[in-house]
Structures are given as C-alpha cells and as structure tokens.
Image: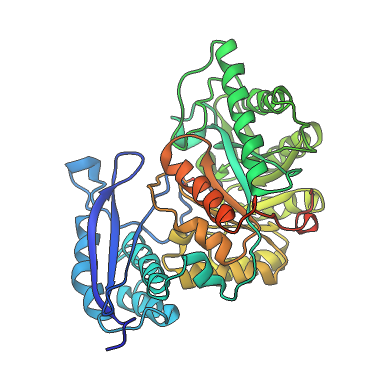
Length: 428
Ligand code: PGA
Ligand code: ZN
C-alpha cells in the first residue's frame, strides 16, 4: 500500500465556541502521517446549505452529533479505506455519492466537510508541508488575504439586539496582513472604549464582536466610524466598514422588519436605505443585503452600487458553483463568501470559488459563527489565493487562532504578509 493511502477514518465528538457538540475527523495514513479537522457551524444559515446532521431530542438541546460521528466511523471509513489522500477530488466524489442526497442530509455536511478537510491535512502532512503550500504548490511567496473583521455582532449572533448581523472593518489602506491586524486591533479597542464611555459595554456576541446595545442599526455604523477615527485612522481611506445584513433572517415575503428601528420595509425601501448608508458612511462591502428569496432585490441593489461596492452573496450563493454562475448572469452580487461547510466538501467549495474567479467576482473565504481551534480556512484562503478572509471578530481564541496562524505563516515566509494588489478590489 502506498504511504498516502488511508488506513483509518475516525470521527469523534468535540465542542465548539458556543459549547455545542461538533464533529472532529482524524484520518490516518498507511505511512503513519495523519490529518485532523473540525466542522464549524453556522447560526444564520442559507436554506441551500449542506445540512449539519444533528441527533435532535433532549440532550444538548438536540445539537448532538452522535449520528454524524457514527457515519464517519462506519460508512465513511469503509468507503475511503485504501484510497489515496492526494486524490481529493476522487475522495470527495465518494463522499458525495455515499451520502446520496442533494444537501448532504444523510451523512451530514458536518461529517463530510470534516472528513474532506482532514484528508487534505493528511496529504499535506505526508508531504511534510503546510496545508496552504500543499494546495498552492510551487515555491513562490503567496499573497495573504485581506482580513474582514467584525467589531459589533448583531442579528442571530446577539439575541437580535440589533437586526443587522455583522458590523465589520477592512483595513483597505494597509500595506500588509500584519498591518491590517494592527489597525483592526486599535479599532476594536477604541470601539470598546466608546461603548464603555456611553455605558453601553455589555459583553460580546457569538463571534467576539461587542454586543451592540444601540438604539438603532444606524447608530452602530455611526459608532464604528467614530471608532476608526478614535484609533487615529482615516475612515474610507485606511479602514472601511462592511456590513453583513443577513437579510434572510428578518426578511419574509419581500418585507423586511427592522425590529430595533421599529419599521417594516419593502425590498425597494431596503435597497434605498442601504444605498443611502453607502453614500453617507465609508462602506466598502455589503453582504446578503436582501433575502435569499428576493433575487430581484439582489439584482436591483447590485446594479445600483456595483462599481463602488462589494456585494457579497453568502446565504444567497451558499458556496455553490451553479448559483454563482446564475448570479453572474443576472448581475446579482459581485463577490462570493466561500464557506466550505455550506458545500460539504473541499472540492465543491473550490468549484464555487473557481466559478467566482471566472465571473470576475471577489472571493472571501469565511469562518462560521460556531468555530473551534481549527485553522483550516486560513490555509484554504492562502492555498487558493483568495483575496479576502472573514473570521468574526478580534477576540476569543477560536477567532484569534486564525489571525495568529496567518501571522505565523507570514512570519515564517519572513515578512509581514504581502496583500493582493490594490486593483483586486473596487475600493482599494
Ligand atoms: P453564520 O454567520 O456562520 O452564523 O451563518 C456568518 C455569516 O453570516 O457570514
Ligand atoms: Zn453572512
């Protein structure tokens, strides 16, 4: 047997950053090398995502994953035993066929994505190189992804204290990965100071961003602009704001209810409100501005702002190559959020990313709100040369593990981490 053939695929239950069970998979090879990966979990999920298999019932609020883990140990192990980990496509094809459903509903996207990622880790380990290098190949110095980092966390990650989900920053003027984190650290710190001064500091939301005790959604954007200034940085020049509206969470049948603002908007009014914000605040990107069931709204909004703004499809595109192609044809979105667990295998996630590249879309590799110490996405972002990386906020170790891994990789390449050229972004 080749050294890189799979001897064992083993699943185990571990715990995520929300204290919920999740799936870890360890793949051991005949040559002794191994790879480990843990599935993340979303809270504001698109309906087209690969589903996480959960046990239901009483224990752990129904979130347990004993069924998914059993599937790894029995069925997945049986099918992948003896396969060569260097053939990721073939392994992922086996996983897709073994599951046999459209949404990974039988084995669970949590089981398949953890297996798929663990296979990649094992292959890199067998070659004795970091995963990013294994994926990228060659020996050129890679560019690092430009970080997109949450400062306030709302929506489903914060008991809906404000309706919008992520109030983020991107250090668009930074010269390196390291500098972008340096600047973001200052913005995060100053945002906390401003909230403390106002008596509004009330802990953090699921991704480590401050829990937004604001009177309106717009107050959060305004406060974020002030935090950038307080950090000694120029809003819109050094650091810009991005928003994940996650509109599917509060939009139903073309009506959008902003509970914090006490109003319900039509799709047109939602568009107009967002365009108005883009005109008045230093905003460089908006994710899921309209609901996943409102493609006309997505198209209308994208056409209105496409030259100056990244319009990012998350729930709307669910890391699916066909949806990316359809969106490109219609002119809905101009950037893709790449979440491997929405697809369920690395091969499918990469296909979506490649479709985005082909369409001229931006690509932002992204973590989920439920995370762990697993840093695979950092390696994917670099290995796939995605221009951007979104990981939640700048606090708590399930987030910092990713930023620190990026710094470690840049440092080992003896640098601060060069970023993609400015013309890779409409606003840089
Ligand atoms: P989720 O949120 O992981 O809870 O889906 C992240 C996002 O919407 O980008
Ligand atoms: Zn999102």
